[in-house]
Image (cartoon, rainbow, N blue to C red; front, side, top):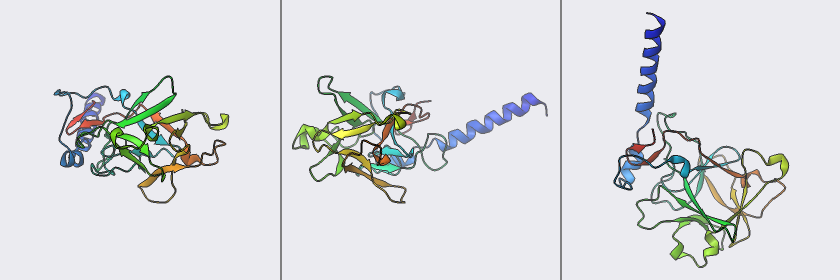
Length: 217
């Protein structure tokens, strides 16, 4: 067999492997709704993924196979890039809106299609972080987050602290060994003493699903 034939076979095997892993069964079982009435996904870089300092994925409902549609919590879960796992897949991430005057951001979940109302990354007075509609909040301040740069030593790979306007505390991944760790808030350690408070948005997730059966390749 010559070199050309070998390369063709290897390319076909790669396509079969990627095609086999691009299965949104878990998503389709929970939500079959798709946007816009089209057969294509919007540009995925408009809906980046949030990662923690340890490169785990920060996910709300349907942003990961680890978080069900009915779960309003926000978690740190294994970082899965679409097409690289035979068991799990990647889904579209977060949409950010900001008030230029206030300097605060709000984050909605692109995958939140089956709840009937758009939900945002929020925190309540007790420090519980969850996805809630704006109309359900005591104050819109609980949906507002401000970006703070870390110390120079940690100011790389686009990491930021996110401070809640409602509580004055920082978004935080809590410890533990489980694959699904809780995200909440805690007193800010702007010296970098708690690396669970550093987050970055990533745009490099290929083969992400935007809804049941539709991905961006």
